[in-house]
Amino acid sequence: MKKHDSRTYYVGLCVTYHDPALSILNDKGEILFAEATERPLQYKRALNCEPDNLYLIPKLLREYCADADEFVIACNWRKSRPIYERLAKRLGWLSPRGILRGKGRRLTTWLEMYQIHHMLACQHHAMRRIGINLARTLGHDFPGASVRFRHYDHHLTHAALACYGSPFDEAVCAVIDSYGEEGSMAFFTYRNGALKPLFEAHGPLSLGFYYMKLTELCGFDWIGGEEWKVMGLASYGRIDEEILSWLRSSMRVEGLRVVPDYDRFFEYLDRLMTRKRSKDDAPETAADLAHTGQHFFTETVNQLIANLHEAVPSDHLAFAGGCALNSVCNGQLLTHTPFRSLYVPPAPADDGTALGAALLAFHEDHPERRIEPRCLSPYLGSRIKPEAVERLARYAQLPVRHLPGEAVISAAADLLARGRILGWIQGRAEFGPRALGNRSILADPRPKDMGERINREVKFRERFRPYAPVILHEYGLDFFANYQESPYMDRTLRFKPAVRDRVPAVVHVDGTGRLQTLKEDWNPRFHALLSEFHRRSGVPVLLNTSFNVMGKPIVHSVEDAASVFLTSGLDALVIGDHLFTKPGIQ
Image (cartoon, rainbow, N blue to C red):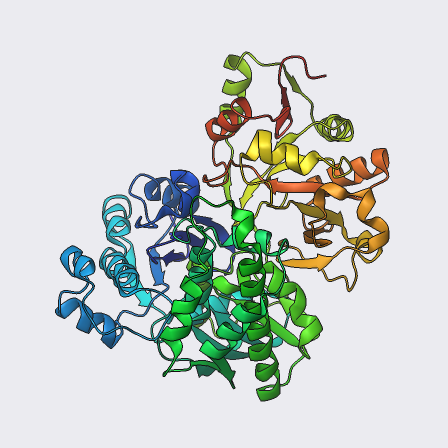
């Protein structure tokens, strides 16, 4: 029997201590799978967990790589560690005792040294665990396969996802996050499939660290990823000129760098600490601080991006790194810089670097392969198994109907139009932090109290946090000023005043919304549901939020979905063609 042609699979690992993730490509460059580890573990951000979980990785490789002859394991960090990390480890600063003692000279940055050393210690241990579970699995299940390991510059893996996943054949790319190997920012040019470094910032001063400190000052927890709360709260505040003057004096933009006032940085930081919200105070007391801090972040990023355009003029900007999750800032980039189009990938933070690393490895082996410019599909994660849905239907003792094809679309749209709140699960899970119509909670945006109701009865989160509108693309210009396509819910835009009363549940207090643009070829089933709701309601918009409760990742399994459904104020749950309802819901 003739042996099949040799098959190579590219496994990308994000081994950052937070937000680990795994991706798989085949030898045609097709993305077979990409998912953050927090989803199957149901542990928010999966802090200090390996991406190649020993329970999950054998199942994934058997499903996607059963005929493998070779594996290329691509990692999102360079193998050699920065000199400061090596020195800190040698001096014992990264040990538990060293972290407690807070040893080492204070660096000119926004975080305390014990926080810096804790992060470095976690990252050191994450690097030591790279591929251990994967190696064990390959040795057991693929004993004849050859294995190659590759390590890439962290910011380059961010840039790879942003550029290879974009609709651009040429662009400039900005990566801004908390830190990489040498600093917190890097800039690249992209043309004809080639990524070339333009500039890399060095040193510990970081816009990512700045926003983490802002989150802390507002009384929230950045370890838990609560930067989202700052963005929501900021809309309730006004500029505090004194705080803004401290921030502007503490650091400034010079070209493609941010530099501190070395002489007075800690003086300004100490002044800011006097404005820190007490845990006993209501979150709203920090609204002016959040607003001013967000304003400074946005103006700083705008200046950097404008300087980037001056250095390398282009119409197209690809933007990645954790700071690219700031949708408020993203929504203003095209207004305040000369760029004419913006692409932010669906997973711009570290989870996305798992896919970025795999794409780099594939293109390193296939330099002749032309990259087709097109928006990356975010629907790359796990599927719900039909037999699990059947078990729920059989044993849950809930009203359930099996409605094939268009019937479930019609029934779901009817429930939504009558004010019911719906859990909606279809196809493959989204890669990235945002639910885009496959793992969503949906509701009618017309009732003014709908957002407050979902906060109170479903998500169990603060009242000041807004909900996102998903809109049929052809109506975008009717609803938003300076409308831009936002396929991954990646930018916040301003609603036109004339339409705000039509969809009050998705209009934030400042008249904005973090929108998701929907086109039929991007997600046909979700598009059909929104179109049917539009036909019934006259409104081409739905409220869309992630299918989870506060503090938990987006649901992964049928059991996760059933738990949220049965322990919250959700009225109905659609999984595939099955419609479950609470007793008494018609």
